[in-house]
Length: 293
Image (cartoon, rainbow, N blue to C red; front, side):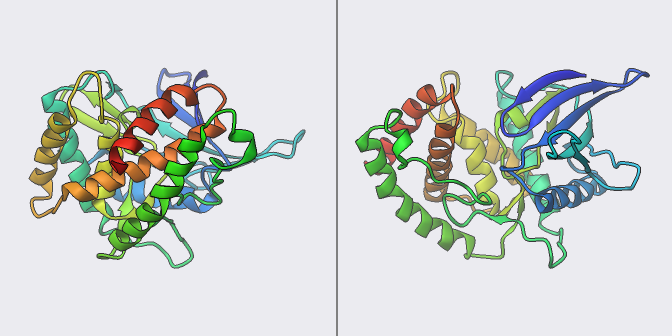
């Protein structure tokens, strides 16, 4: 077992006695719930059955469940654990190309086509991206007293100014037509490239919303990117997306406010981290100022 990452959840690479590789994920109790895991399982099963998308395949435990519950006998802490077949390939980030963006667009389109037809039992209530802070029990910390050493009064004023506007637009977009299940965190680190194939992993943040919201989450990472212009990335991702979803209407104004909603959510979240916030705050604040101007 090899430790890989600890952001919200903790990820390990595991290799069995035959050499087969897996990703073992210990879910964070704040960022997701058991219901989120159940929805993740249903979505992954639907995608696998469709055969149109390459995703990290979830392995059921001996009881036929998609994730396991383990209670530590010493601390009484309850852990939710998922085991996935290893998704071969390299990270999308730092391995981008014109063809990679086009192929990713096609894959996102396939994913949305499958997810649109997945129906959930009435007792399962996914998160809804109809407001800026949409995660379950999400703490809004940017105005708390302990953040004064991290943020300026200008930062708080700008956040206060933009959040009501974004909430209004998010609500209107969410209600514009029937929402569907989305990946919810389509960033370049959750995407693998294996030759000409694109693979998608980490469906923990599955959410109800409009398909354009997944696209905005991805494109947000390429605003002011050092190697690729936003226009370049957007054009080729949407070119691929329209191959598999030819009737999709992607309005630039909606992309802009959705990317800002993502930015504002992350600006609040990053303040809960110890080391990563200064660089992200500088970039996020610059984007926020540009949007409001």
